[in-house]
Image 1 (spheres, rainbow, N blue to C red):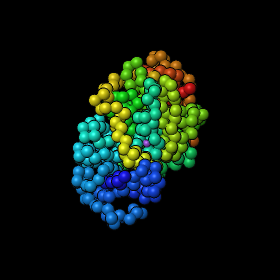
Image 2 (image 1 turned 60 degrees about the vertical axis):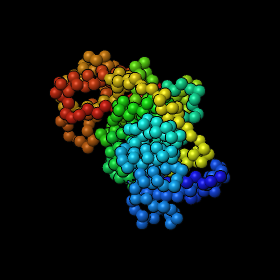
Image 3 (image 1 turned 120 degrees about the horizontal axis):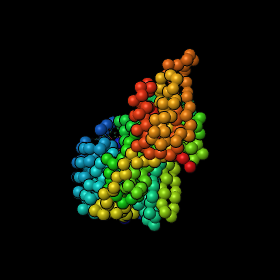
Image 4 (image 1 turned 90 degrees about the vertical axis):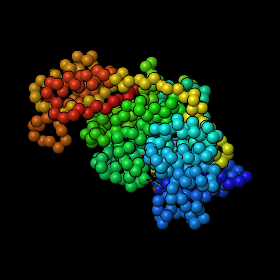
Length: 432
Ligand SMILES: NC(=O)C1=CN([C@@H]2O[C@H](COP(=O)(O)OP(=O)(O)OC[C@H]3O[C@@H](n4cnc5c(N)ncnc54)[C@H](O)[C@@H]3O)[C@@H](O)[C@H]2O)C=CC1
Ligand SMILES: N[C@@H](CC=O)C(=O)O
Ligand code: NA
Protein backbone atom coordinates (compact mmCIF):
# COMPACT_ATOMS: atom_id res chain seq x y z
CA UNK A 1 0.00 0.00 0.00
CA UNK A 2 1.17 3.58 -0.63
CA UNK A 3 2.31 5.79 2.22
CA UNK A 4 -0.21 8.07 3.93
CA UNK A 5 1.27 11.47 3.08
CA UNK A 6 0.83 14.02 5.82
CA UNK A 7 1.16 17.81 5.79
CA UNK A 8 1.54 19.29 9.26
CA UNK A 9 0.99 22.96 10.16
CA UNK A 10 2.23 24.16 13.56
CA UNK A 11 5.35 22.64 15.09
CA UNK A 12 5.00 23.82 18.69
CA UNK A 13 4.47 21.65 21.79
CA UNK A 14 2.06 19.23 20.10
CA UNK A 15 3.31 19.42 16.50
CA UNK A 16 6.91 18.64 17.44
CA UNK A 17 5.76 15.79 19.71
CA UNK A 18 3.74 14.34 16.80
CA UNK A 19 6.83 14.42 14.55
CA UNK A 20 8.90 12.59 17.15
CA UNK A 21 6.18 10.03 17.90
CA UNK A 22 5.64 9.21 14.22
CA UNK A 23 9.39 8.74 13.78
CA UNK A 24 9.62 6.57 16.88
CA UNK A 25 6.62 4.38 16.03
CA UNK A 26 6.92 4.29 12.24
CA UNK A 27 7.51 0.56 11.84
CA UNK A 28 4.99 -0.43 14.49
CA UNK A 29 2.22 1.74 13.01
CA UNK A 30 2.98 0.45 9.50
CA UNK A 31 2.68 -3.11 10.79
CA UNK A 32 -0.64 -2.36 12.45
CA UNK A 33 -2.26 -0.28 9.70
CA UNK A 34 -0.56 -1.70 6.60
CA UNK A 35 0.73 1.77 5.61
CA UNK A 36 3.58 4.01 6.58
CA UNK A 37 2.57 7.44 7.82
CA UNK A 38 5.00 9.95 6.31
CA UNK A 39 5.16 13.66 7.08
CA UNK A 40 6.08 15.07 3.68
CA UNK A 41 5.39 18.78 4.21
CA UNK A 42 5.22 21.22 7.11
CA UNK A 43 4.25 24.84 7.73
CA UNK A 44 5.98 26.45 10.67
CA UNK A 45 7.24 29.88 11.57
CA UNK A 46 10.75 28.99 12.71
CA UNK A 47 12.72 26.85 10.28
CA UNK A 48 15.85 26.86 12.42
CA UNK A 49 14.37 25.42 15.62
CA UNK A 50 15.45 21.88 16.56
CA UNK A 51 12.36 19.61 16.84
CA UNK A 52 14.39 16.46 17.52
CA UNK A 53 13.75 14.95 14.05
CA UNK A 54 15.37 15.27 10.64
CA UNK A 55 13.21 17.57 8.50
CA UNK A 56 15.72 17.96 5.63
CA UNK A 57 13.60 15.89 3.22
CA UNK A 58 10.37 17.64 4.07
CA UNK A 59 8.79 20.43 1.97
CA UNK A 60 8.45 23.72 3.87
CA UNK A 61 5.53 26.10 3.40
CA UNK A 62 5.38 29.58 4.86
CA UNK A 63 1.63 29.67 4.34
CA UNK A 64 -0.37 26.89 6.03
CA UNK A 65 -3.33 27.51 3.70
CA UNK A 66 -1.09 26.87 0.69
CA UNK A 67 0.10 23.64 2.29
CA UNK A 68 -3.48 22.55 2.93
CA UNK A 69 -4.63 23.41 -0.60
CA UNK A 70 -1.63 22.61 -2.76
CA UNK A 71 0.65 20.28 -0.84
CA UNK A 72 1.06 16.76 -2.22
CA UNK A 73 -0.65 15.29 0.81
CA UNK A 74 -3.47 12.92 1.76
CA UNK A 75 -4.06 14.36 5.22
CA UNK A 76 -3.65 17.85 6.63
CA UNK A 77 -2.83 18.09 10.35
CA UNK A 78 -3.64 21.44 11.94
CA UNK A 79 -1.73 22.11 15.19
CA UNK A 80 -1.40 25.90 15.09
CA UNK A 81 -4.38 26.73 17.27
CA UNK A 82 -6.65 29.77 17.19
CA UNK A 83 -10.36 29.91 16.42
CA UNK A 84 -9.93 32.02 13.27
CA UNK A 85 -7.54 32.17 10.36
CA UNK A 86 -5.12 30.81 9.36
CA UNK A 87 -6.32 27.66 11.17
CA UNK A 88 -9.89 27.92 9.86
CA UNK A 89 -8.90 28.87 6.31
CA UNK A 90 -6.36 26.04 6.18
CA UNK A 91 -8.74 23.38 7.51
CA UNK A 92 -11.50 24.55 5.16
CA UNK A 93 -9.09 24.58 2.18
CA UNK A 94 -7.95 21.03 2.91
CA UNK A 95 -11.50 19.70 3.30
CA UNK A 96 -12.74 21.52 0.18
CA UNK A 97 -9.90 19.90 -1.74
CA UNK A 98 -11.05 16.48 -0.47
CA UNK A 99 -8.12 16.08 1.93
CA UNK A 100 -8.90 14.70 5.33
CA UNK A 101 -7.99 16.74 8.38
CA UNK A 102 -6.76 15.92 11.87
CA UNK A 103 -6.84 18.79 14.34
CA UNK A 104 -6.41 19.37 18.08
CA UNK A 105 -8.09 22.76 17.81
CA UNK A 106 -11.14 22.74 20.07
CA UNK A 107 -11.54 26.53 19.90
CA UNK A 108 -11.99 26.33 16.14
CA UNK A 109 -14.29 23.30 16.30
CA UNK A 110 -16.44 24.79 19.05
CA UNK A 111 -17.03 27.83 16.84
CA UNK A 112 -17.44 26.20 13.43
CA UNK A 113 -17.38 22.43 13.91
CA UNK A 114 -20.70 21.83 12.13
CA UNK A 115 -19.70 23.98 9.15
CA UNK A 116 -16.40 22.10 8.86
CA UNK A 117 -18.14 18.73 9.22
CA UNK A 118 -20.43 19.72 6.33
CA UNK A 119 -17.45 20.69 4.18
CA UNK A 120 -15.84 17.32 4.95
CA UNK A 121 -18.98 15.43 3.98
CA UNK A 122 -19.31 17.42 0.74
CA UNK A 123 -15.98 16.12 -0.57
CA UNK A 124 -15.87 12.75 1.20
CA UNK A 125 -13.01 13.83 3.45
CA UNK A 126 -12.79 13.02 7.15
CA UNK A 127 -12.42 15.46 10.05
CA UNK A 128 -10.94 13.82 13.14
CA UNK A 129 -10.22 15.60 16.42
CA UNK A 130 -9.48 13.14 19.21
CA UNK A 131 -6.74 15.41 20.56
CA UNK A 132 -9.16 18.33 20.92
CA UNK A 133 -10.99 16.83 23.91
CA UNK A 134 -9.20 15.66 27.06
CA UNK A 135 -5.83 15.23 25.30
CA UNK A 136 -4.69 11.62 25.39
CA UNK A 137 -8.02 10.17 26.60
CA UNK A 138 -9.80 8.45 23.67
CA UNK A 139 -13.18 9.93 24.55
CA UNK A 140 -14.17 11.15 21.09
CA UNK A 141 -13.72 7.67 19.65
CA UNK A 142 -15.52 6.17 22.62
CA UNK A 143 -18.55 8.41 22.17
CA UNK A 144 -18.54 8.14 18.38
CA UNK A 145 -18.21 4.37 18.23
CA UNK A 146 -18.50 2.56 21.53
CA UNK A 147 -21.66 3.91 23.15
CA UNK A 148 -24.13 3.47 20.27
CA UNK A 149 -26.41 1.21 22.30
CA UNK A 150 -26.86 3.81 24.99
CA UNK A 151 -29.08 6.80 25.45
CA UNK A 152 -26.66 9.15 27.12
CA UNK A 153 -27.99 11.08 30.05
CA UNK A 154 -24.96 12.98 31.28
CA UNK A 155 -21.40 13.70 30.21
CA UNK A 156 -19.15 15.38 32.72
CA UNK A 157 -15.63 15.68 33.92
CA UNK A 158 -12.35 17.42 34.43
CA UNK A 159 -11.49 18.59 30.92
CA UNK A 160 -8.67 21.07 31.42
CA UNK A 161 -5.23 19.89 32.51
CA UNK A 162 -3.95 23.37 33.30
CA UNK A 163 -6.75 24.16 35.75
CA UNK A 164 -6.59 20.78 37.44
CA UNK A 165 -2.83 21.14 37.77
CA UNK A 166 -3.23 24.62 39.31
CA UNK A 167 -5.99 23.56 41.73
CA UNK A 168 -4.09 20.45 42.80
CA UNK A 169 -0.86 22.28 43.56
CA UNK A 170 -2.62 25.19 45.27
CA UNK A 171 -4.56 22.81 47.54
CA UNK A 172 -1.72 20.38 48.28
CA UNK A 173 1.27 22.72 48.46
CA UNK A 174 -0.39 26.05 49.29
CA UNK A 175 1.29 27.62 46.26
CA UNK A 176 -0.07 30.81 44.73
CA UNK A 177 -2.26 30.77 41.64
CA UNK A 178 0.38 32.67 39.63
CA UNK A 179 3.22 30.27 40.45
CA UNK A 180 1.12 27.24 39.49
CA UNK A 181 -0.02 28.82 36.22
CA UNK A 182 3.57 29.67 35.22
CA UNK A 183 4.60 26.09 35.87
CA UNK A 184 1.69 24.77 33.77
CA UNK A 185 2.81 27.05 30.94
CA UNK A 186 6.41 25.88 31.26
CA UNK A 187 5.26 22.26 31.02
CA UNK A 188 3.36 22.94 27.76
CA UNK A 189 -0.11 22.38 29.24
CA UNK A 190 -1.58 25.87 28.85
CA UNK A 191 -3.07 27.45 25.75
CA UNK A 192 -1.04 30.14 23.95
CA UNK A 193 -3.43 32.55 25.70
CA UNK A 194 -3.90 30.95 29.14
CA UNK A 195 -7.04 32.95 29.87
CA UNK A 196 -8.80 30.30 27.76
CA UNK A 197 -7.78 27.78 30.41
CA UNK A 198 -8.28 29.70 33.63
CA UNK A 199 -11.50 31.46 32.62
CA UNK A 200 -13.14 28.16 31.69
CA UNK A 201 -13.47 28.68 27.92
CA UNK A 202 -11.20 25.79 26.97
CA UNK A 203 -13.32 23.46 29.10
CA UNK A 204 -16.43 24.93 27.44
CA UNK A 205 -15.02 24.33 23.96
CA UNK A 206 -14.38 20.68 24.84
CA UNK A 207 -17.76 20.29 26.50
CA UNK A 208 -19.48 21.69 23.41
CA UNK A 209 -17.87 18.94 21.32
CA UNK A 210 -18.71 16.21 23.85
CA UNK A 211 -22.33 17.38 24.03
CA UNK A 212 -22.70 17.14 20.28
CA UNK A 213 -21.16 13.67 20.17
CA UNK A 214 -23.18 12.43 23.14
CA UNK A 215 -26.60 13.90 22.38
CA UNK A 216 -26.54 14.25 18.58
CA UNK A 217 -26.97 18.01 18.80
CA UNK A 218 -25.29 20.82 16.88
CA UNK A 219 -22.17 22.17 18.54
CA UNK A 220 -23.42 25.15 20.55
CA UNK A 221 -20.69 26.68 22.71
CA UNK A 222 -22.80 29.81 23.20
CA UNK A 223 -25.29 27.77 25.22
CA UNK A 224 -22.75 26.98 27.93
CA UNK A 225 -22.73 28.74 31.29
CA UNK A 226 -19.04 29.40 31.99
CA UNK A 227 -17.08 30.33 35.11
CA UNK A 228 -13.34 29.84 35.53
CA UNK A 229 -11.02 29.39 38.50
CA UNK A 230 -9.35 32.81 38.62
CA UNK A 231 -11.40 33.99 41.61
CA UNK A 232 -10.70 30.94 43.80
CA UNK A 233 -8.49 31.60 46.82
CA UNK A 234 -6.40 29.35 49.03
CA UNK A 235 -8.94 30.15 51.70
CA UNK A 236 -11.74 28.59 49.62
CA UNK A 237 -9.68 25.48 48.91
CA UNK A 238 -8.85 25.17 52.63
CA UNK A 239 -12.46 25.67 53.65
CA UNK A 240 -13.56 23.04 51.12
CA UNK A 241 -10.97 20.64 52.50
CA UNK A 242 -12.21 21.21 56.08
CA UNK A 243 -15.75 20.48 54.90
CA UNK A 244 -14.72 17.22 53.20
CA UNK A 245 -14.50 18.36 49.57
CA UNK A 246 -12.01 19.04 46.78
CA UNK A 247 -12.56 21.83 44.30
CA UNK A 248 -12.44 20.86 40.62
CA UNK A 249 -13.27 22.74 37.44
CA UNK A 250 -15.98 20.57 35.92
CA UNK A 251 -17.72 20.62 32.59
CA UNK A 252 -21.18 19.08 32.78
CA UNK A 253 -23.78 18.41 30.08
CA UNK A 254 -26.98 16.78 31.27
CA UNK A 255 -30.41 16.08 29.82
CA UNK A 256 -33.12 17.78 31.85
CA UNK A 257 -36.86 18.22 31.32
CA UNK A 258 -36.07 21.76 30.15
CA UNK A 259 -33.43 20.72 27.60
CA UNK A 260 -29.70 20.15 27.79
CA UNK A 261 -27.99 21.92 30.66
CA UNK A 262 -24.37 22.73 29.79
CA UNK A 263 -22.20 24.31 32.44
CA UNK A 264 -18.56 24.87 33.34
CA UNK A 265 -17.65 26.08 36.81
CA UNK A 266 -15.57 25.23 39.87
CA UNK A 267 -17.34 22.48 41.78
CA UNK A 268 -16.88 20.99 45.24
CA UNK A 269 -16.86 17.20 45.02
CA UNK A 270 -16.78 14.90 48.07
CA UNK A 271 -13.23 13.75 48.82
CA UNK A 272 -14.19 10.09 48.60
CA UNK A 273 -15.42 10.43 45.00
CA UNK A 274 -12.98 9.08 42.38
CA UNK A 275 -13.15 12.48 40.65
CA UNK A 276 -11.67 14.12 43.74
CA UNK A 277 -8.60 11.89 43.45
CA UNK A 278 -7.89 13.02 39.86
CA UNK A 279 -4.81 15.17 40.35
CA UNK A 280 -2.49 17.38 38.34
CA UNK A 281 -2.71 17.44 34.55
CA UNK A 282 -4.86 14.28 34.56
CA UNK A 283 -8.38 14.59 33.11
CA UNK A 284 -11.41 12.39 33.75
CA UNK A 285 -14.58 12.08 31.67
CA UNK A 286 -17.65 10.30 32.98
CA UNK A 287 -20.17 9.04 30.40
CA UNK A 288 -23.50 8.09 31.94
CA UNK A 289 -25.72 6.06 29.63
CA UNK A 290 -28.91 4.12 30.28
CA UNK A 291 -27.00 0.84 29.93
CA UNK A 292 -23.39 1.70 30.76
CA UNK A 293 -21.71 4.24 33.02
CA UNK A 294 -18.00 4.59 32.51
CA UNK A 295 -15.22 6.94 33.45
CA UNK A 296 -12.11 7.47 31.36
CA UNK A 297 -9.06 8.86 33.13
CA UNK A 298 -5.77 9.91 31.59
CA UNK A 299 -3.40 12.74 30.72
CA UNK A 300 -5.32 15.76 29.47
CA UNK A 301 -2.53 17.96 28.14
CA UNK A 302 1.14 18.03 27.23
CA UNK A 303 3.05 17.22 24.07
CA UNK A 304 3.22 13.43 24.18
CA UNK A 305 -0.28 12.90 25.60
CA UNK A 306 -1.83 15.04 22.87
CA UNK A 307 0.39 13.61 20.14
CA UNK A 308 -0.86 10.15 21.14
CA UNK A 309 -4.39 11.20 20.13
CA UNK A 310 -3.26 12.90 16.90
CA UNK A 311 -1.28 9.81 15.88
CA UNK A 312 -4.25 7.54 16.68
CA UNK A 313 -6.40 9.63 14.32
CA UNK A 314 -3.75 9.37 11.62
CA UNK A 315 -3.63 5.60 12.08
CA UNK A 316 -7.41 5.53 11.68
CA UNK A 317 -7.05 7.43 8.40
CA UNK A 318 -4.31 5.03 7.29
CA UNK A 319 -6.77 2.19 7.80
CA UNK A 320 -9.23 4.00 5.55
CA UNK A 321 -11.81 4.90 8.18
CA UNK A 322 -13.96 7.92 7.29
CA UNK A 323 -16.35 8.40 10.23
CA UNK A 324 -18.71 11.35 10.45
CA UNK A 325 -17.04 14.06 12.54
CA UNK A 326 -19.80 14.12 15.16
CA UNK A 327 -20.90 10.52 14.74
CA UNK A 328 -23.71 11.19 12.24
CA UNK A 329 -24.28 13.31 9.13
CA UNK A 330 -24.09 16.99 10.05
CA UNK A 331 -27.60 17.64 8.66
CA UNK A 332 -29.05 15.17 11.18
CA UNK A 333 -27.56 16.99 14.18
CA UNK A 334 -30.43 18.74 15.95
CA UNK A 335 -30.57 22.14 17.60
CA UNK A 336 -30.80 21.51 21.35
CA UNK A 337 -33.23 23.14 23.71
CA UNK A 338 -31.08 25.09 26.20
CA UNK A 339 -31.82 24.54 29.91
CA UNK A 340 -31.29 27.89 31.64
CA UNK A 341 -28.71 27.96 34.43
CA UNK A 342 -31.19 29.70 36.76
CA UNK A 343 -33.01 26.36 36.99
CA UNK A 344 -29.90 24.43 38.01
CA UNK A 345 -30.47 22.57 41.27
CA UNK A 346 -27.83 21.53 43.78
CA UNK A 347 -25.99 22.42 46.95
CA UNK A 348 -23.99 25.63 47.26
CA UNK A 349 -20.94 26.92 49.13
CA UNK A 350 -21.25 30.65 49.67
CA UNK A 351 -18.46 32.72 51.25
CA UNK A 352 -19.44 36.21 52.27
CA UNK A 353 -16.98 38.76 53.64
CA UNK A 354 -19.31 40.59 56.02
CA UNK A 355 -18.96 43.49 58.42
CA UNK A 356 -18.31 42.12 61.89
CA UNK A 357 -21.46 43.47 63.55
CA UNK A 358 -24.00 41.91 65.89
CA UNK A 359 -27.02 40.66 64.00
CA UNK A 360 -25.26 39.99 60.70
CA UNK A 361 -25.61 36.22 60.99
CA UNK A 362 -29.33 36.63 61.66
CA UNK A 363 -29.73 38.83 58.56
CA UNK A 364 -27.98 36.22 56.41
CA UNK A 365 -30.04 33.35 57.79
CA UNK A 366 -33.22 35.42 57.34
CA UNK A 367 -32.61 36.28 53.68
CA UNK A 368 -31.77 32.64 52.96
CA UNK A 369 -34.99 31.53 54.66
CA UNK A 370 -36.94 34.06 52.56
CA UNK A 371 -35.85 32.06 49.51
CA UNK A 372 -36.67 28.72 51.17
CA UNK A 373 -33.00 27.81 51.28
CA UNK A 374 -32.12 25.34 54.05
CA UNK A 375 -28.65 25.70 55.48
CA UNK A 376 -26.59 22.62 56.23
CA UNK A 377 -24.01 24.75 58.02
CA UNK A 378 -23.06 28.34 58.69
CA UNK A 379 -19.53 28.99 59.94
CA UNK A 380 -17.66 32.18 60.67
CA UNK A 381 -13.96 32.07 59.78
CA UNK A 382 -11.43 34.70 60.73
CA UNK A 383 -9.69 36.05 57.59
CA UNK A 384 -6.31 34.37 57.10
CA UNK A 385 -3.45 36.11 58.97
CA UNK A 386 -5.61 38.35 61.15
CA UNK A 387 -5.04 38.18 64.93
CA UNK A 388 -6.91 41.20 66.31
CA UNK A 389 -10.73 41.47 66.39
CA UNK A 390 -11.33 41.87 62.64
CA UNK A 391 -13.58 44.47 61.02
CA UNK A 392 -14.79 41.88 58.58
CA UNK A 393 -15.39 38.17 58.92
CA UNK A 394 -15.82 35.42 56.43
CA UNK A 395 -19.13 33.66 56.80
CA UNK A 396 -19.31 30.36 54.98
CA UNK A 397 -22.69 28.86 54.22
CA UNK A 398 -23.36 25.39 52.91
CA UNK A 399 -26.86 24.94 51.56
CA UNK A 400 -28.96 21.88 51.00
CA UNK A 401 -30.23 21.40 47.46
CA UNK A 402 -31.77 24.58 46.09
CA UNK A 403 -31.89 26.45 42.80
CA UNK A 404 -29.40 28.88 41.25
CA UNK A 405 -32.18 31.42 41.05
CA UNK A 406 -32.93 31.23 44.78
CA UNK A 407 -29.25 31.54 45.68
CA UNK A 408 -28.76 34.58 43.46
CA UNK A 409 -31.87 36.24 44.92
CA UNK A 410 -30.77 35.55 48.49
CA UNK A 411 -27.28 36.95 47.90
CA UNK A 412 -28.70 40.08 46.28
CA UNK A 413 -30.99 40.57 49.30
CA UNK A 414 -28.08 40.15 51.73
CA UNK A 415 -26.00 42.64 49.74
CA UNK A 416 -28.90 45.09 49.84
CA UNK A 417 -28.70 45.02 53.67
CA UNK A 418 -25.28 46.74 53.43
CA UNK A 419 -23.43 44.11 55.47
CA UNK A 420 -21.30 42.59 52.69
CA UNK A 421 -17.77 43.99 52.30
CA UNK A 422 -16.67 42.39 49.01
CA UNK A 423 -17.93 40.22 46.17
CA UNK A 424 -19.41 36.93 47.41
CA UNK A 425 -17.80 33.66 46.39
CA UNK A 426 -20.19 30.96 45.17
CA UNK A 427 -19.12 27.37 44.46
CA UNK A 428 -21.61 24.73 43.43
CA UNK A 429 -21.50 21.41 45.25
CA UNK A 430 -22.00 17.91 43.86
CA UNK A 431 -23.12 15.46 46.55
CA UNK A 432 -23.92 11.76 46.85
N1 LIG B 1 -0.51 21.78 24.50
C1 LIG B 1 -1.45 20.88 24.81
O1 LIG B 1 -1.36 20.17 25.81
C2 LIG B 1 -2.63 20.72 23.94
C3 LIG B 1 -2.88 21.54 22.87
N2 LIG B 1 -3.99 21.35 22.10
C4 LIG B 1 -4.22 22.20 20.93
O2 LIG B 1 -3.19 21.92 19.99
C5 LIG B 1 -2.92 23.09 19.23
C6 LIG B 1 -1.44 23.43 19.34
O3 LIG B 1 -1.13 23.64 20.69
P1 LIG B 1 0.39 23.77 21.19
O4 LIG B 1 1.26 22.90 20.41
O5 LIG B 1 0.33 23.65 22.66
O6 LIG B 1 0.66 25.29 20.82
P2 LIG B 1 2.07 25.98 20.55
O7 LIG B 1 1.84 27.44 20.72
O8 LIG B 1 3.14 25.33 21.32
O9 LIG B 1 2.32 25.64 19.01
C7 LIG B 1 1.62 26.25 17.97
C8 LIG B 1 2.61 26.42 16.85
O10 LIG B 1 1.92 26.86 15.70
C9 LIG B 1 2.74 27.84 15.09
N3 LIG B 1 1.94 28.71 14.27
C10 LIG B 1 0.99 29.60 14.67
N4 LIG B 1 0.53 30.26 13.60
C11 LIG B 1 1.19 29.79 12.52
C12 LIG B 1 1.18 30.11 11.15
N5 LIG B 1 0.39 31.06 10.67
N6 LIG B 1 1.99 29.42 10.31
C13 LIG B 1 2.80 28.46 10.78
N7 LIG B 1 2.88 28.13 12.10
C14 LIG B 1 2.08 28.80 12.94
C15 LIG B 1 3.37 28.58 16.26
O11 LIG B 1 4.54 29.25 15.84
C16 LIG B 1 3.68 27.45 17.21
O12 LIG B 1 4.94 26.90 17.01
C17 LIG B 1 -3.87 24.17 19.77
O13 LIG B 1 -5.06 24.17 19.00
C18 LIG B 1 -4.17 23.68 21.18
O14 LIG B 1 -5.39 24.15 21.67
C19 LIG B 1 -4.89 20.36 22.34
C20 LIG B 1 -4.71 19.50 23.38
C21 LIG B 1 -3.59 19.64 24.28
N1 LIG C 1 -4.67 23.89 27.64
C1 LIG C 1 -5.33 22.63 27.57
C2 LIG C 1 -4.57 21.74 26.67
C3 LIG C 1 -5.32 20.53 26.31
O1 LIG C 1 -6.42 20.57 25.78
C4 LIG C 1 -5.40 22.01 28.96
O2 LIG C 1 -4.72 22.50 29.86
O3 LIG C 1 -6.17 21.06 29.13
NA1 NA D 1 -8.94 12.87 23.49
